[in-house]
Amino acid sequence: MLRVGLTGGIGAGKSTVAARLAEHGAVLIDADRIAREVVEPGSAGLAEVVDAFGADVLAADGSLDRAALAAKAFADDETRARLNAIMHPRIGERTARLMAETAEDAIVVHDIPLLVEGGLAANYHLVVVVDADEDVRVRRLAESRDMSERDARARIAAQATRERRRAVADVWLDNSGTRDVVLAEVDALWADRLVPFEANLRLRKPRPPQSPVLSPPDDTWPQQAERALARVRLAAGGTALRADHIGSTSVPGLPAKDVLDLQLTVPSLDDADAVADALADAGFPRADGEWQDTPHDGGAPWPKRFHYGADPARPVNLHVRPADRPGWRLALLFRDWLRAEPAEAGAYSELKHRLARRHQADGTVDGYTDDKQQWVNAAFHRAEDWAARTGWTP
Image (cartoon, rainbow, N blue to C red):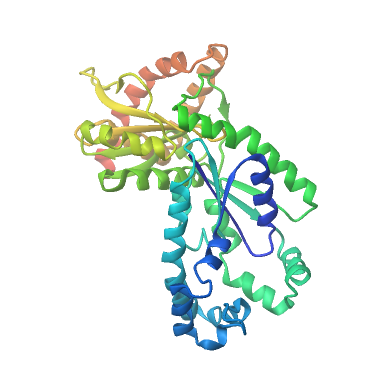
């Protein structure tokens, strides 16, 4: 199934987005609803909350007085951590059970306010963040929850900052304006990204070939790569020796095809095969066929495995290289050498532009890649000289 993490600050209007996705057919798992279920009257969760915070967090009918609990639990970091230690394991168990009961071709939207605070982003194929200006959020909280401005701003300040949310957001929805605007964005997200993403994931569908098209340097490429790498690391687990952003998108100021090249280094090809299914389930299906790197010394090719990203809006090439072959090291050397040598990066940029124009009607990048290889092979020797002079190590 496609797992989508939906989050946003209090008052941002996350429920509006969740409801629209459910209308389209998403299976909605609401963390707030689960949080209420695990502290229902008579539950072990409620008994533990009362033991930790006192009987005055109960309403007259014996149910949890959420406002009274919030006044105590959000007083400081220690009390908030105490509540989280009670709630999070129970919420996690219930959530896992609901996901296990969901159809394999479902698009599951997990509406979870504390996704960022809990460090959970890598567990999802895609993270959608709903945001709104703070003044808008304060006004909404006053209107919908009768919350004072002071309390509203305190609750906002206790949550993750906008910068932390941006760091994990694959999709950023600004809900500061009218409802129709954000709903239109959600409709497009569903049709153009979520539906094809689910199909690509389930069918292990490869990305269609296209001609080489260079994009200007994008300062967000490293942050986008880090989100994908977090998913790769989680999927590979202890088998991963390291996972890195490589290729042209990893070199500041260098034009590149808008495709993130990532590298997972594992001990051996057998290890690469062992993690293939886990990587596919995480959103990186393995490509068919035999894949190899061309050695710059003219020797036998270096075998590797190749995976591609299933997200249609964020193309990814994932090279899984064994540590007992030189390919993983050379990829890192080439990246770091270009970062350190602006003249070489400039020459490489000129070559890329020239070859992209030559192969703009090919419908594939094969010719473009082949024509670059001679320059790259010679560049590896210059990079090795640089490594020897500077003492570079990966």
